[in-house]
Length: 86
Image 1 (cartoon, helix red, strand yellow):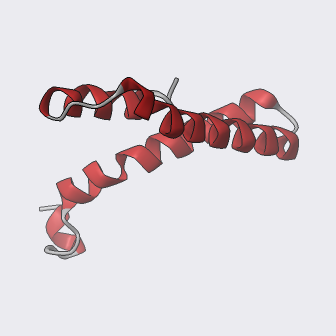
Image 2 (cartoon, one colour):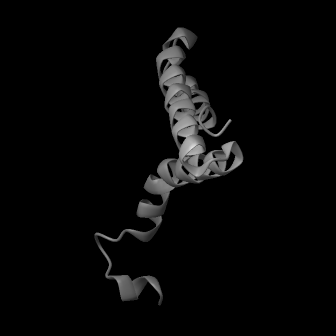
């Protein structure tokens, strides 16, 4: 679910402004789901628990897809780190 939501959100947001063929969603959805399944499988084997692997993959997805929002909110390039706490 976390892998599909960002792709569908971008489609829903931009679909109003720019007409997008729903068939164009298949490659990004397939890529996102494939990467999630591969990461989940690898981490599930390494951590010896599918639940722990899913938790780590979910955390990675949240951090990956929220990076731009966090970077924009903090604007580290324009402020120094102490300014963020003021």
